[in-house]
Length: 194
Image (cartoon, rainbow, N blue to C red):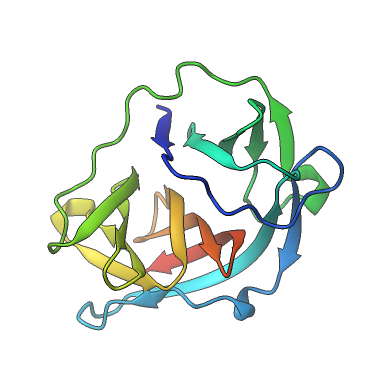
């Protein structure tokens, strides 16, 4: 199932990529704000294990993000599409590949759960994790509504999109986050568990 979010605003472009292709630059995750756990939720843990800065070609911005069970697909304002891999195993050069744009990528969106409180704007949902933005407080959060037990993680990163993968044998998941921070775009990989 492919999930898609149409982004109706121009995303602030990161530093230009090399030539006419987007690139990813390794970035120390300790230099980014941590993914924080809701103090009311006992036993939760969250850790950012890797981060990359996404560098877009000059004069372009992201118009759409989608995913199909694994890598992210980004569409740029010049009409080109790229697959972005955010696993632990690929080299930096292997993380972005140009691909054919999928015209069906706007079908079958995963519906978010009801917001945990008023004033939240839903961004997207992946495997029962939903990313929200609190426009008044300038804060993003991710809720985990698996088994109807809402758990929340907070971050000052301006989240654009998330993709989650749940472990089949433990109560945990990997969450990829695409976010803006200080005018640049980052892609982080985060481990959350209970």
